[in-house]
Amino acid sequence: MYVTLLGGFLGSGKTTILVELAKAAADAGLKAAIIVNEAGDVGIDGERISVEGHEVVEIAKGCICCSLSGTLRDTLININREFQPDLFLLEPTGLALPHQVEEIIRLSRIQPDKVLKVGVVDAYRFDLLLSKKRNFIEKQLSGSQIILINKCDLVDASIIRQAQENISQISPDSDIFAVSALTGQGLDEVIRGMLP
Ligand SMILES: Nc1nc2c(ncn2[C@@H]2O[C@H](COP(=O)(O)OP(=O)(O)OP(=O)(O)O)[C@@H](O)[C@H]2O)c(=O)[nH]1
Ligand SMILES: [Mg+2]
Image 1 (cartoon, helix red, strand yellow):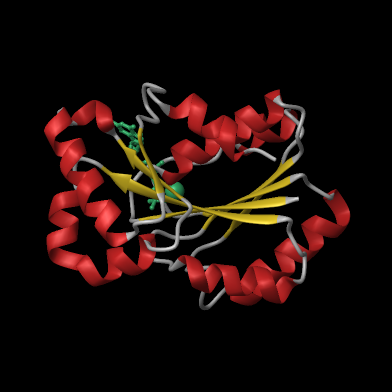
Image 2 (spheres, protein in one colour):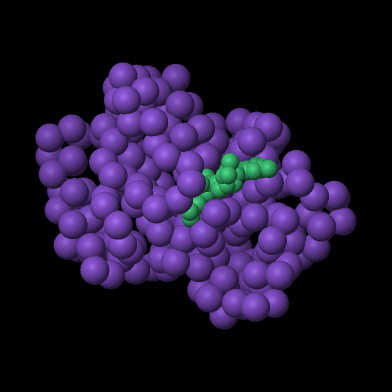
């Protein structure tokens, strides 16, 4: 079983990407369990994804890494026992730090074969965000195996190149891809590589 952890700042497109991942998992005949926190303007269409054979759990308000960490741990344990998914798709709040969530996964002892940390960046806002919150963004992105520069439909190529340069400085070992979750540009190939 894999755990895919979608990290990234508020509004960067995590839920939109997660929904695409869930669809691809269903197409590949995989059982995915989706755990999101409820904040955010794109909701998870729980009905539809459950119909496709997935389990959707929304954790009510708050950061799953701090006040609700017990809940996340229990959720992981319970879903794993009752549902035995091939894949957990996890979206903590945009203010979460991936290593905190990883610690909760470790404490749950669900023992995944792989924890894939995916950082999501909003191409349109990245420069500004980096100038204002560099420390936080560095902590949030560094250590991600994959970083997606999302919303590439909104910016021109020079902005994307600049973001790529900045990100490879912040997290030199990450694979960086420019995508648009809205148009699907660049996303299919990346998603295929993320599934177990
Ligand atoms: N133009 C454009 N808009 C996008 C893209 N991906 C997501 N969005 C929009 O960006 C907004 C935020 O997307 P979400 O998927 O909710 O982002 P999130 O990271 O889950 O947000 P939070 O959960 O609030 O942190 C929504 O209005 C999406 O429709 C993209 O590739 N291009
Ligand atoms: Mg979201």
